[in-house]
Image (cartoon, rainbow, N blue to C red):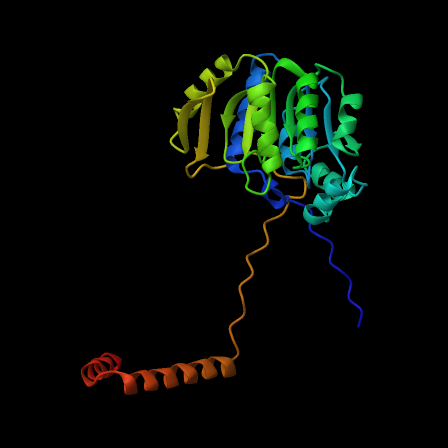
Length: 302
């Protein structure tokens, strides 16, 4: 008998969207983007590499009137080279543009501007010095990340923020090399590090670091470490039982949550069989134990 494959349920909460966007980074995205809005900074938003849309959905909430939000991803398109094609096939085979768009429209009325293709198309599609916030989470290969960082430098406003994902993961050495090379040789100033993202600017990092440190030191749910390396102040942050910042539910969250499914009790025959096996184990154990221990066990059972 043929069966039809059940389509995935639309997301009700941000956590229902597959992807990697830890609570600490949700807090930091919210803080950086809110700080820009409070300071009257205007500029476009850009995300390179969106997967299923989790961080893009979050970032889209901070888009101001008159600004443009652009996202770029290969989706199911062709990769520009064999190494990128192998990476995409291994890690992102489930990603399609339609899945991203459905997830995004579950939380927003309109889609962002979507560029389908390699990240190398971004410089030709986004105006130089037009962005206030750029999130790079695309290929993990060194040559692609190097190019993405260079593009971010050209597209950001003087005090704009760039976020580099997976800068320290063991399976992404290309990102690590490109990120720290940008710090040492390309003028990027690290503002802070989370568990998996580096937040930086080509502007003056001191004012934003000062405000960030003041905010973090008032919280008990964020661990803080400050170090100095190669002339840079390195602010390291780690969640300590942190809860995600409030985020509006999707338009699908109109009804009550489905009750948790409880596994049905095992059939009586299975329970009896398990009990019989346990009884046999007890008898063998009692036969093998010293008499003094055997008497104690029998007394306890009685």
